[in-house]
Length: 362
Image 1 (cartoon, rainbow, N blue to C red):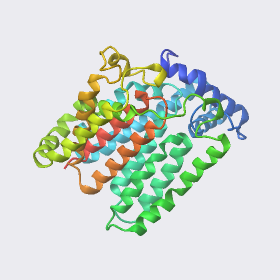
Image 2: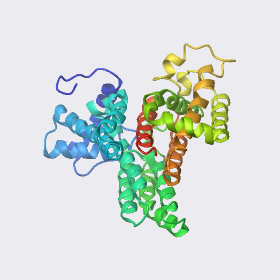
Image 3: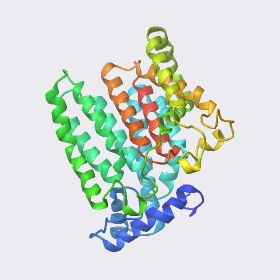
Image 4: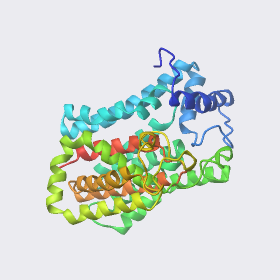
């Protein structure tokens, strides 16, 4: 796609219309960047990296896109290598394969989009949380990665939550460890605060009229994606799901009930004016709704996703289960705090979390 100069599709359009223009402006301004109202909804970390490449190496479109290829490849390889250390090389490759095949990961790899750098940093934080039970090295590294993450995509501040939970579930439950973890993550919150003051909001002024808001359908939509995408991970998750069902049936049923409520209370019909379109929202829109409010597919797949996710979490050690529970809940809450319920905002994390919990099954 890069070497042929292909520029077809949504990812290419976003790259050309927004991100490449920001990057080339930064190349011209380097190193005195004007960040007051950039042509992107995100913080500028990714754009500064590519602007640095453009300034000192090459500013050709091919060179800049190849930098994105390196970032996207590093993300997928990191997940494959981390999984391989726990399950073997073949399983590591298979667990990372859905990420490599995701249109949203592929799009951010082939064109100039900041998404993969953010997912890479999220993966780094989660991996550090999983390994760090004692000492402070993991906490320092995780906090640095969180700071970098917020500099790339401000909405991903939610990744502080699993860091705090990982600190609590250390060698012993210690309020002092949690306090230390909170202090360690303060620079990331301070960075977010700087941009909020600069922009007078969570996004640059030019975007504040149409991307800010909440979408209450997002939790049910994310659970629906978990139900659909869990199928590819059943070779690793099925034994745990069966075991969890026999031992923790009430907990799994309760999760299913929560999924039903999340599917029933907010409107889940496909509606562009409400931010519910693109991705799975497209084919779901052909299904007749209930009272013009609820898509019946959500009534099946959202509770199924909640149940499968809960059953899979129950197969993890207590500390790891707490980390991924906190991460997933925080991710769902943060993802709901934007008007657009777009699959491209959700799918890479869904696939990343499924790959990691599959690799960690006991």
